[in-house]
Amino acid sequence: MNPLPPAFRRLAASNLASQCAQQLGLAAAPLVAVLALGSDVTGTGLLQVAQTLPFLLLAVPLGVIADRSSRRGMMALGELTRAACFVAIVLLAWLGGLNLWLLALLSFVATVGAVAYSVATPALIPAVVPREQLVQANGRIELVRSLALTGGPALGGVLVGWTGGGPAFAVAATLSLGAAFALRGLPTGAPPPDQPRRDFSHELREGADFAIRQPLLRAMLLTSSVFNVAYFVLQTVYVPYAVRHLGLSGSGVGMTLAAYGGGMVLSALLLSRVGRHLSPGAQMRVAPLGAVVAALAMLATLWWPTPWLAGLCFFLIGAGSVIWTVATTTLRQAVTPHALLGRVSSINTLATYGARPLGAALAAGVGALGGEVACLVAAVACFTLQAAIVLASPLSRLRAMPA
Image (cartoon, rainbow, N blue to C red):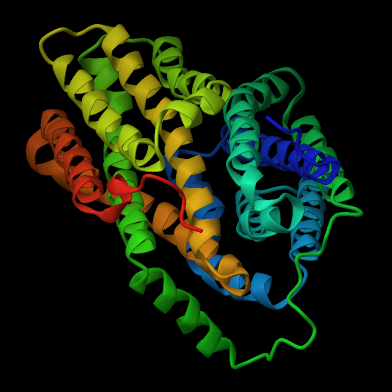
């Protein structure tokens, strides 16, 4: 395996700092709201909306901007924006002027920066590494994300618990500044200067039209949407189910949920071997079919109420998600014209994050009618549907990445 270019190593370092900053912010904000501002569940719900709404509202428009400008510059601006928001939270907390509404507003703006960075990153990678190393590069980025998802929330909890919210946000701001600084000297990923610039809404429709009409991308988007609905049905019901039926304490629930990050890290480390032994189509099947097995393992806890089955469920989903993300990102980069990469990446982000509140709402409705058991059954049904979509689509028949 050839070493990745030095420019990619700087991009990966930037990505690690960015992902850690995001996870620290996501973990610290609700803890500060509860411990320092005395917030109740309504307040933490407001924060969750503020931290996710930009993905729904701005992912696609920012994708258009990424295709019209310097992708490196957009990523750096996103991180600088996030750092400024975190510094503002630190200063307000120090001066005693922080309240829930200001925390929510600054969290919203910080997430706008995160969306800008995440939308532009997959579009910049092909400008940094040769095509034959895209799988290797995407795998390295996914390993970085897995490490941040595994360690970021824990670090945020420790910092807030030991020192309060200010130092946690100060560390996050420093990481965001480091992420922006690491991008210096990379290719801009900007379109050619002679590329015609058309109406914004036309370019928006052009990206959406390409993603929907391209058979591989259409199946990928549909699968991702249904998977995320299913996963958030499971996530929404899991904590009350684990406490009431499995008899787990808060730490026990945390340990089983942490198995998700463990599965991601292990899968990312073994990714090169997976790529050598499985065709792209087989890689596309691993995650959806593994998710069905995972959901059945959780359903089996109705008869065998053991945390080991619950942990296995999250481990399998985490491991499969890395394989799916790397394979689909590489495929998306292979079949999408360079000028459309930002828009198509943003549509994928919208399909992923936009489905999550739908899953939470579905769990709330099903839970109100049939309780926690009905939610587990609904999760199994949705996971089965996304596996069926993949098996019936051209994704599962790919023997090699398209030229």
